[in-house]
Image 1 (cartoon, rainbow, N blue to C red):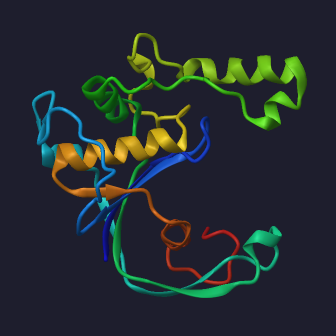
Image 2 (cartoon, rainbow, N blue to C red; image 1 turned 180 degrees about the horizontal axis):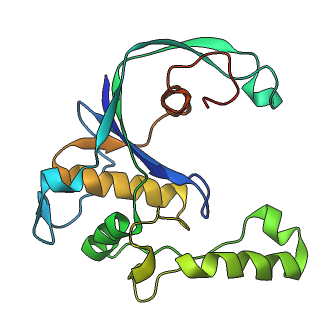
Amino acid sequence: MSRGVYQSGFSSEWTHRLHFWELRGSHGSSRLRYPHPGHVDGLMSADLLPELALIPAGEFLMGSEDSDPDERPVHSVHLDAFLIGVQPVTQAEYGRFVQATGHRAPAVYELPLVVTAGGSGRERSFRASGEPYTWADSTPPPDRLQHPVTLVRYSDAVAYCEWLSDASGRDVRLPTEAEWEKAARGGLESKRYPW
């Protein structure tokens, strides 16, 4: 069923990577529509898609015995073949989406619990560390255009996937946890880290 993924980064508002999958089939009735289908700023739809790597179909061992309880027990999972983006979504790539749709630009909008529980000093530190990646007037920082996009939430990542689907004419979505783990393992089994 799945045939492609575009990886980048975001799972939390501030640090997650954006991961995209291309699927064959319909998107469903809740799919958003954005302007400029087929092209953005003079780019053809094929130019919007990232370089993709094929992850072959098959089983892999998911989880870890020496990790958090939610990753145990190690279990076998079968996945169909899919494609995943080789590089994270960049600030420049995400900028095309923001410019085309008017979607909110990356910034610190809400604070995670780990920050609010740490008091005002932790909040100041958190905001200061995010400042270089905060956009001005819906424009990414010019010295960070090729950096991975940050300061986005899960809902922002989903909206980006929907826009990229419409703009490229290809079905794109976020990967599942199992798809991401299989791709990140690089085919290695029973090792905590692939390196």
